[in-house]
Structures are given as C-alpha cells and as structure tokens.
Image (cartoon, rainbow, N blue to C red; front, side):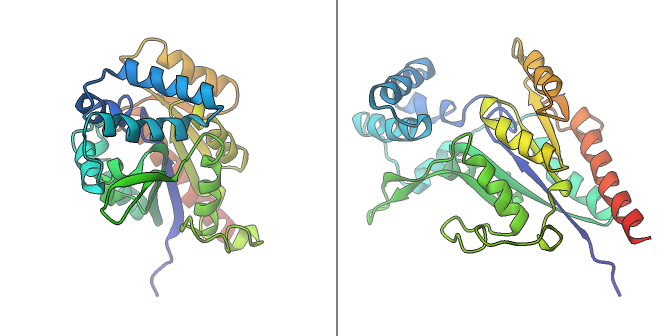
Length: 276
C-alpha cells in the first residue's frame, strides 16, 4: 500500500514577497494617468478623513479614480492588469521545483496566497495556477460585470484568519461552519508545525508571529535593491517574529530554497521519529 504523504503548506504574501512593489503600480495606476505617489497619497487622505480601513480606502479609490479616468474595471480588466507584474528571481519555476523535492521526501506541499492585494490581479499572473487558494482582497461585480463594491478586504489582522482556515481545511470564505467549529489539533488537515509563512512587511507580522508561535516557520524576505530592506528583515528575526530573513530570491541554491528544503526534511524526520 502506498505511503500517505505528509501535509504541508506555504502561505505567501504577494506584494514585496513574490513581486517587487505593489501590484497596482505596474499597469493600473499609470492607466489612470496618475503616479503611484499621488494615488497612495489620496488613499491616505481618504482613510484619515473617514477613519477608514486602509484596504477599503484603496479599493474605493481604485474604483473612484477609474470612473474619473473612464477606465474599465471588469474582472477581465483586473486580470489584464495582473499580466505584466514582474516576479522576483526564481518565482516562475519555484513551485514545480519545491513540489518535486517535497514529494521526494514524502510530503504533499500546497501553496496559498494571503494578501491585501487584489485577487483578480493575482489571477492574471502566470503563477496563479500554482495556488490551492488565493485569499486576497477582491471586488464584487454587478450584473454588467463591473466592479462595484469590495467583496473582501484583507488587512494585517484579518490575514491570520486564513492561516486557521488552511489549518482546519476551511477554505471557503463564505462558509464559517468549519472555522468556528472545535477541531482537535491532531485532526486538522495541515498542522501549524507543517506550515511556513513568507512575507515582507508590517502587515505580515501577525501571520509571521502566529505561525512561528504555533511551531511552524516564518521567513521575512526583502528586496536586495531596496535601501534598508535587509535591516528591517533582520529586525523581525531579532524581535522573534520571523525564523529567518532572506533576500527575495527563489532560485535553486538560494537562501529561501535551502531553508524550505531543510524545513521539509525536518517535517519528514519528525514524522518518522514519531512513527518509529
């Protein structure tokens, strides 16, 4: 009888983690005839004026500015805005490589996005198919297919909800029956000890800390070309929020590649010891 594979999950932030910068800054904001600094300044002003959540503020600003600039905001348009997002080195073939390694060690590895970015834009990227589920902010679309209202806003504290959803196997956001149900730890589909969270910024700290405190691992990545980025990642490690700081380079033989492979080995070894 075939040996059952050990469950493991990697959850990623998107902006600054898998791709440099914010996804809106590639094609969407230029289409509005705005510069990024101008757009984000207007978002901050809206949030402050209305005591509004920053994520809801930027989503509302996207729709308002698109209307002013006569820019289409159908789901297909958001997907098109996601097509030209640049990925960090090694991301394109990362999933195939690391999945193969995990399988060779008897581990079934799944990948998830937990991001404050726009899920419809993530759907336009070439790596969308690699994820079991994309938990990200998204729009509701009216009967004409036009974005009209935020369907989901994922901020820095609500991000942690999705780690529990992965842990319990409750991936449908509209269904809270499983996520609120008591499930013994040994009966949960993906133990926290078998989980990695990879993120880069302040909004990722609650997720990093939760996974690490529950026995898993958190990796704080940084853009090596961005001034002060490494120092910030190192500080997250020093503060006990992350297990490891690493440049956002997913190529074979890099720090992230070797670290994740070591964690896979650890999961396999722990299961072998437990079963012996």
